[in-house]
Image (cartoon, rainbow, N blue to C red; front, side, top):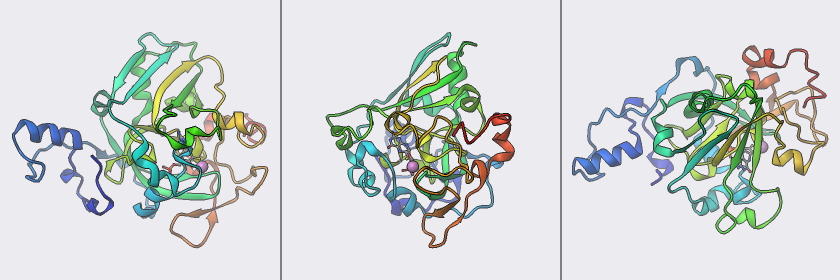
Amino acid sequence: MKYSLKDFDVTDEKLFLNRRQFIRAGVAAGLSLSAFPTLAALNFRANPNYQPNLKLTDSEHALNYNNFYELGTDKSDPPRYAHLLKTDNWQVRVEGLCAKPQIFDMDDLLKIEQEERIYRFRCVEGWSMVVPWIGFPLSKLLNKVQPDSSAKYVEFISILDRENLPGQKFNVLNWPYREGLRMDEAMHPLTIMATGLYGKELENQNGAPIRLVVPWKYGFKSAKSIVTIRLTDKMPTSSWMESAPSEYGFYSNVNPNVPHPRWSQAKERPLGSFFKKKTLIFNGYADDVAGLYKDMDLKKYY
Ligand SMILES: Nc1nc2c(c(=O)[nH]1)N[C@H]1C(S)=C(S)[C@@H](COP(=O)(O)O)O[C@H]1N2
Ligand SMILES: [Mo]
């Protein structure tokens, strides 16, 4: 059900059809997949507010140099073992402190208006990329379950499948992968649930079928292949905080002034580029998010 890299040459978004709608409509109309119907089933629009004039990372890099420890700890493991991630009949449970906890299947989630946004993304290890994500603001999903006023944090839980996921046979992390955001961070318009990138459904190695993207934080906050979203009144402990509390804090905002204990965070190497560039505070999104942390000591709350 996935496209190959070579298929990606659709630059006109109007030509891009939602794969599921396409198949469903095609089947309904008795068409084979090769007969390209002229369905106007546009599945995303480019959000004009998030089209910065930045050079996009070549998709070859974003799809083949990944972190996804469930599939292995090497950067080449996720694409290599991508097929071992089973995404059929995926459901996302949204629960906890809310009036209407619900289970959403992917069709429900894809009905939420999808938009494309070009975001900077930076890994704590120093590589970065600029990619066109497709998805929707997390706030739209959270509003559907009507969070209680007592909900102060949101916990994200990724897939647990020890049978199939090769990385989960080893306790490199305390599985399942867990991350968290403060409620205001989760409701911030920059925070999205992504279902695609480069015009297409997410590849498994990028966290199919649905993942978080929080562009002002280090990459590990953007949990992949999410199955549970839980509203809570306590600060969640992420898998990384558990494994190395002195290295990974709850906030993990991109900050060139706060070094990782084992390396500087002042520079980054855009994937595909030989040269490093200076890292920007909040990954370049300071105008949008610095206000969330005013009066907070960012060295203490790293
Ligand atoms: N479930 C899960 N989510 C995850 C990870 C992981 O190992 N498991 N790795 C994180 C890290 S460290 C980074 S940098 C990004 C990488 O995203 P990408 O491979 O799509 O570039 O995913 C994050 N989300
Ligand atoms: Mo990362």
